[in-house]
Image 1 (cartoon, rainbow, N blue to C red):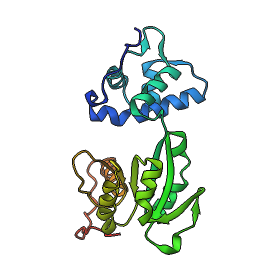
Image 2: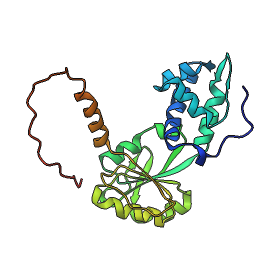
Image 3: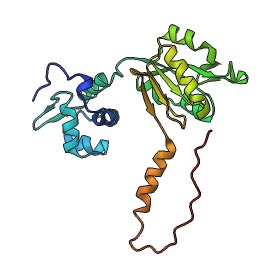
Image 4: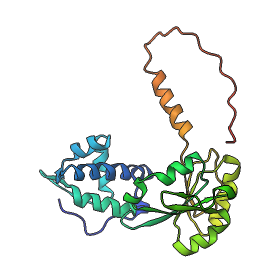
Length: 235
């Protein structure tokens, strides 16, 4: 099989497949760094942690990039997936809220290698202004419009407490940002045409707890602990 002359439109790719493309890209990057030139669908699926049938189905939405009996050219497929995702270009990012989480995100070195450039760190606390984190100055939130205009910011990251998140999202949208990554423990209301991805670490832990309790031996007679009503945290 040879590569099709054009890939399908991103809007034709199922959302579940889109969510797995970065996983395939990460696996291909690791294979390339290990010196692997070609790999089979089984090898790539194993590296990505999915089954090979699912991987082949996902890649079929992009084009036919494999060669029967040979497999995938790692460098070429890596480029094609990166191009489809949009990380062959540099995406300017602004992080709002420089508490513990925001500071950790600002220090994360993986953004740059994956096509994301943090151009500004914003916080409402005047005592944080002019601090530098990973070489980027912390600036007042009031500078948002000027920063978006100067750098053409594409993505805003919300790492504020829950009670401030909606106002921050509104300001990001008003400034022209149409993609938001939300770490605040709340649901954001945004206009049509604005994409929001929510990262909730507590939900991920609860999903793990669900699977963990099912690893217990059958017939466990331990008493069920009393559970206090769950209250949403505002912090």
